[in-house]
Length: 609
Image (tube, rainbow, N blue to C red; front, top):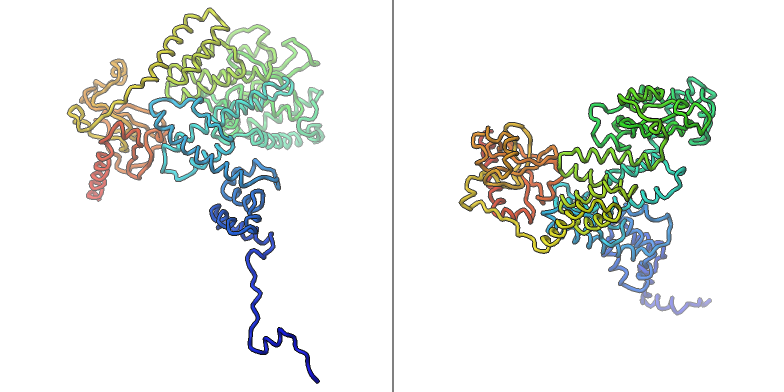
């Protein structure tokens, strides 16, 4: 019986193989292609190359798809919080924008070193005109790169990030101040003050509230032991106010037991004028503060447990008051006054006067608004800044607290004038100084004398900036510099005081005033003022002017943790610091000398061993 054979089978029987059916990458399902192209080893360049191969792969790598979304998330993970989960987005466009911002930020930061080496960076120079969250992400990337390299780049990146965050916080503060008074929380206001003065710290209202929640739970635990049926144990946080005085008293007793006995919170009498006492996150961390910061915490905790306390702007010692009568009473004897600085001690109106040693009028026992609480808090910081030593740290605190105070109370002539004088003294933002002076003149024409003086000198400063003086170049080979033994970048030890430091400048002879020379007892040195003196950055964060006979190269060089190191040096090279381009221009022959001294010191140490 004949068997029918197909044509294909006939071809096979004749020894001719059929062409294999080849599978191509592009034949795979889209989901599988996306999975492959999201492999972590692939970079954005690889995705670009793949998408250029054919229309199929180009379509898979479309801007709003998973592939570019994955590339964006892998490269900039910190930015994910700005997008909702499964949000539809043109990831390719976002990627390109973020990439361009990164390039522009780096160029901007690199240019700042040359422009601001001799002056304080002012806020008007830090406006970048780019998406804020992209700018911040790139600045954080620069700051978190290799710890010992690019020190100058990091120094100015930190300055810019500081200012950008402050601008955002000021916007939040203005929105806060626009809320109705009854909706303003003293805790939120205190956190905003804290954030503005510490913009690089991780301080959030949610984080602070969470810590207070933990303290509140401890208070409830103590309260449960004394009064198992207490209504504050059942009520949700902030729900209702206790009317019964005995129930309120039980809450305050439990709060005192937890805060001052169990957790050991206390007033910082030994270091009262430390600004950390005013920052809420530091008060929680260190468990110490001043009357106003401890009062904000105490009042917030009491409020969450149903006891309404009011802030009292008592002179020299901030207090809280607890009403013993129906609401609305203005009789000062109808209140018990609570000293949060004094372990929650309860006082009568008369006993409050003993705290400050003199009598006051009834007005000082009145409750104040949240805005007034913030003004008092910022006023404390202002006074600390004015008491400072005239270094960059105290100037920064003064600038920050003035910004805050004038945001809350923009027409305070006294502080407007102080701000203008501060900017003038620091030689920054002359155009802003003129605006401030014009505002002062409009508010109070009687200030025309002080205003006129500052206007004249500010205009001179603006003219001077148009024709900057070429900085002095100091060459070691010059005859007048032959006695200079040390060079910039060397890590030194002070023979008498024992501190570690790095040299960032020198003079062939002491250039300080006669008053300074007398105060520092320079005449008691063997060579007096007639010897080289060195500008040094000290490990403790200070800048000093040290005589040559008091310094010696450090036998075991170490990093100097000074905030200004990046202003002068680009790299820590284990044994010394490498001067940045600007400092090398000032001292063109010093780096060779530094390397020679380091080699000589290493040989001496090696021979000793």
